[in-house]
Image (cartoon, rainbow, N blue to C red; front, side, top):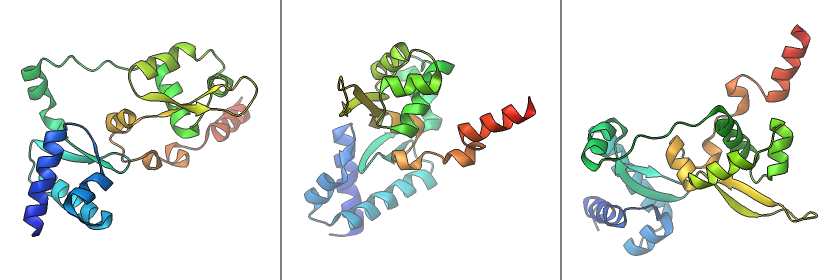
Length: 185
């Protein structure tokens, strides 16, 4: 099969699915290995981006999805009557950051870091689909463990949790910043 034909098939599969499609399913449908399939998909995604097309192909944790280009959001939302995105409060962002970097993590661990109750923030993040229950900690009471979702990756434009910025890139770790603050006081 020619590359152009593979791209057409991939394009049709992603378009029809409307959701993310695992790389393994695309490779199986094309009777190709995963690395070749990934290369063809990324090439197609690069074409959409470089040609400033209205659609994009994004990668989400070994899956791919077709979506509208961010610069077209206003026009698409006015056509589809999509409600404006709700902004996240500081508490939600802090809680989400802790979950993203420490996952899997319990509410008690989040509360220990933030110093306040995390029930409301975690529940709101679960409602928004950014966080989900990923298991239970093998400890007394078997507390729930939370982690980020594919919606989290989509929302922040990440391929996987490994793409999160390294804390040092953000100006040091929390302890380093606290030490600096304590020295200045």
